[in-house]
Image (cartoon, rainbow, N blue to C red; front, side, top):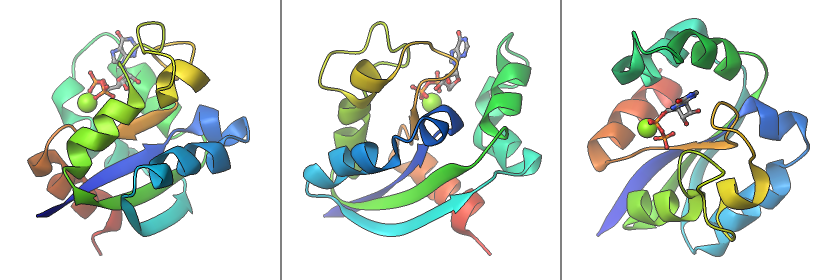
Length: 134
Ligand code: IDP
Ligand code: MG
């Protein structure tokens, strides 16, 4: 059965001109892009997306960073979409991410790690509502 996931190309990657090669990686999986939009996140959207990290040392920097410029918001759909995308993204810290993954190939630091992707089907529903709800 098809599953949906929320994927976001973060501001560092947009600024570096990496939108096309990153979208290519996701398209290569066979998943279907259902929604696609360039936008600057509001602070409210950023806080809602990262609510689980509130209070952590990196939280303020994360909110500042993710609202610092345009991102590409996407909904991808297909079999095991959440797991397929998390595998493709690689580890949170690009230094630990395997070559061939998006973070491994395009990222360098944990605070600017190129992409966001939902970590479960539940998170995906919540995040799609935050970013594409009315
Ligand atoms: P994920 O993006 O792989 O799901 P999470 O642990 O959910 O990783 O963290 C969310 C985001 O917060 C990461 O993508 C990264 O940008 C940032 N982050 C996580 N841990 C750190 C840290 O130790 N220092 C700075 N930023 C961090
Ligand atoms: Mg996460």
